[in-house]
Image 1 (spheres, one colour):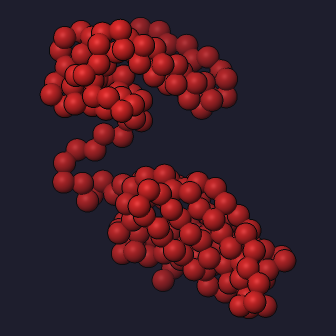
Image 2 (cartoon, rainbow, N blue to C red):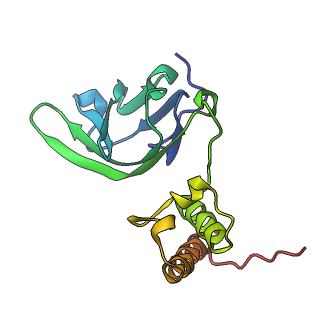
Length: 180
């Protein structure tokens, strides 16, 4: 199978239902000397195991779309290990995001971050125009409908602060000017 793009390392994100490939060079653990690279991805209640194939000295991961189609969307933590049958070493770890395959969605998909969904639900509730779905939205461990007005306003301030800090990080600390 020919892959159009082969990344130089595990990508930050992949999309379920798409083929993905990456190649890793580990000078201390070359595939040509019987070292095998494996990845273990985990998130609450789920585990994905990936085994790289030898490609000269490099380790080549190729995952067909039929396999990634079974992956549940979300953020996974991963560890990469190199092993040769008698030794095993941790050679990498981090996070990878698996995005949903829009073609497989039975209904619309809300791509907003969790804090934006919660902010919208709280604002609608404060304004007296919240839908049943928004009223049942969980904020922390409490549904919006079970929060007092003071709790809703406190949660709104906290969530807007989170949104600001995430936006500030994404823009590299630059303020974005918007005019209407």
